[in-house]
Image (tube, rainbow, N blue to C red):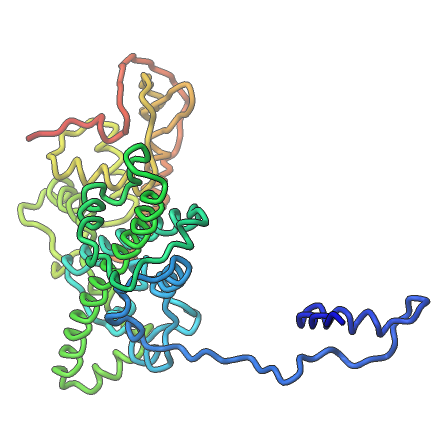
Length: 403
């Protein structure tokens, strides 16, 4: 007599629900279904880098390896980490492919100050992690079944154990091997090894980030221990205050600092450079500074290479650009108009765009706006036209640079 196999749990649930109905379709009074003797397991987050040890560099099956890589790029802070690094409660997980989240783990919200070398190294690492993850994830999604089921022998625990394949992957730089030079079985082995090689590159980059974060944390601990002012330490425990102090003491962005120096020299006719310690503000008003910057473009003022680069960065941030077309400059009531077939940007419009952007700069928050200076009284429109052919990819490239 054949024994009927037991139905799986989901099918058993459906069967129990079906048998509890009457023939006319009405359902009987019954209690809500509950899973018998089943409890949900609560996962307790671990401190970052705790699950990263020597076993991370071992070869794993593709599914297990991809699950491990996914666990590295996200981190759920523990309660101790939230208190220690002032992680805001709204931040459920930290994404280690984003620079700001990495800085939080390094003590950014504790008032710790980073140098430019730290920022550049961590930014490069975050970008490299994202690139390497995309390569691993793309290959994992396209793995054929024979490759995903392939298993290496017990003698190969790490990718370094097969020196021939390791040298081949270094030559190919992780690219697929040529199919016409290998048999089918060899291609399966090569593809399985290539996936392990790509995953290993991500893990190595993550290990570099781990060591870098630990070094910065050591400096953070030394900074906190060396401070003898208890009031300062209590202030550092407040995330909002520490973030405000860190930003308030930051100097101007380099590109904006260069343009302020030019304004200080030419508009104020000052022979000394402006510094944050000066008694006078960097500019009299945001409107005057906007008018001055717009004049640099439309009056074709000669700029140095540094000033030209700073102006280019400013326009890129504001997303102001033009395609390679011939423009026609017209003078309407002493106002320059740069027009093309697709768009028209007046000098006053550029002043307004500059004003709106500069008004959001934190270091200029105490400078008066005086927006009324951007809209002088208009007179009767008199059109004077002069032809001038300008060919440029970007408005700032129309400026002349002095070496």
